[in-house]
Amino acid sequence: MIAIEAEGLKKRFGNVEALKGVSFKVKRGETFGFLGPNGAGKTTTVRILTGILKPDSGKARINGYDVVEETLKAKQSIGVLPEVSNAYPDLTAWQNLMLVASLYGMRKNEAEKRTVKLLKEFGIYERKDSKVKGFSKGMKQRLMFCMALISDPEVVFLDEPTSGLDVLSARMIREKVLELASDGKTVFLTSHNMEEINMLCDRIALIDRGKIVTIDTPERIKAKVGGNVAVEVSFDKPVRLPRRLNAKKLGDKYIIYTTAVHETICEIVDYAKKNNVKIVSIDTRTPTLEDAFISLLEGTK
Amino acid sequence: MKSLIKSLAIAKKDVLMYYTKGPVVIFGILLPLFLFLAFSVGRSLPLNFLIAGLISMTVFFASTSVSPAIAPWEGQMRTLERLISCPIDEKTIILGDIIASMTFGVSISAVPILIGVVIGLIPSNPVVLLLGIIASAFCFSCLGLLFSAYPTNLPSTVMMISSLIRFPLIFISGIFIPVSEMPEWSRILAYLSPLTYFTDIARYSFDLMPAFPIYVDLLVITAFSALFLALAVELHKKAIYKRI
Image 1 (tube, rainbow over the protein chains, first blue to last red):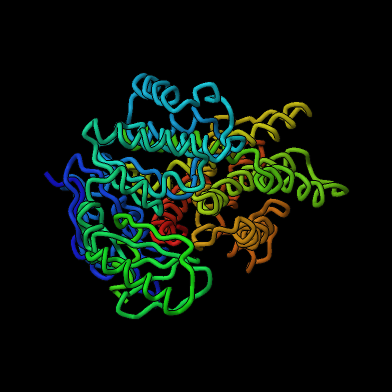
Image 2: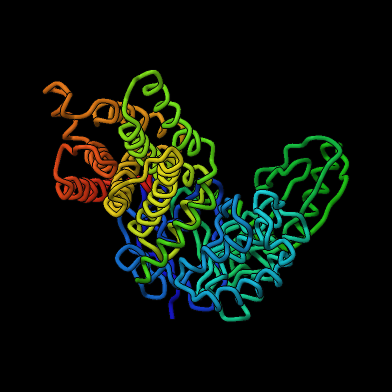
């Protein structure tokens, strides 16, 4: 069964074409990562899927309901944790949750039980009667997560859920995402944190300049880099490595993706000897999702 | 019914969030009081005429001070996005805002009525007055929503727009000069203001001769309400997405 479906989504803001025909499908129970650089169209896509924006053309469906034609039915089955905190600052945590519960049509008893459960699970029950404006960023984010889950939605949209959080809050949020996945919920996750996406998602879509670049599992995406090993080397002074190595400079290091590890290292050592430079460090590792991300984005330019 | 319950939840949120905000208190309570004092002190006008005028001004200013401020504030705080992502439509949000604004207008009207009671002026037609207050508070709340139809997230801009419309209405609606004593040209303008008809009801409730039959006042206020509501819904349906 398909939980989220985007079909040729297009959206323009003035002269800027934010989405140029975005299409993908997310299966029920899947944790789907949505990656892309700033301005790629991630938030626009999320806003269309959650019924906040209307697409210029194309279709989007949540659990089979069209987000434009059957918007209330589509919204009834989703919970949204937006990128920017938007709880009411002059309301208490309790009042914020009860408001959202009312807007989802929950009965008072059911809403109260669920509110207590979530506030306890997220460790903010003791602050339930405090106004949100006095909350730290981590507490606000936990409350926002509670607000996204108040109606026990089948599909949860999480837009940069751990951005700017301290280690403990970020860890708690990640654990909750894993719990949602084990409960069979569909999670749509956007994040800049590659490690987080790698750890949490079943599949990933990479979007750039309004177009989907690739959709695949994290491991298959890493394999698309072009080599199965990354050689990372640094020298005692700036160098110009041979072009055939196709080295990428990252800070004081050079990264070379290769399938011929031995030959590549020998070539680097030969180069260092010939050019009278010293190797400060050399390391081999498998390509990370970040490597794949950069490589795929460069391929689109 | 479900939609009404959701509107009431939004109204409750508005009460908790916005009733004590500075611009609401200043434009909704203090300003009409000072304006009224500025125009009535030193003039030898009957007390019942003054109290009826004060009630009209209070209901008008209070009811039009909450509804226009909500949308820009919500846009600024990004809470509008939260509301739109919930399973509610634009009408539910608008109705919630109107209920909150109307409740503010009705509640604040108790202040000038109590002042009247303290100085010995008890409305002779309290039921008509109450009906008039409820109907006109609804009407003025819908009018207030029209002030914020321009999609800005700056409450000060909306307050400026609303002041530009509210102040002229005060002077053409027979609050300081009865409609019957106005020159012909300004009488025509007075007929175009919904405040004229509520002022007429307030005067009638304090034993003054009304300019129109009371049922006409109520009918005209209802007609204005329908017009303002329809316009507000249409305009806000478009504006709401431009605020995000």
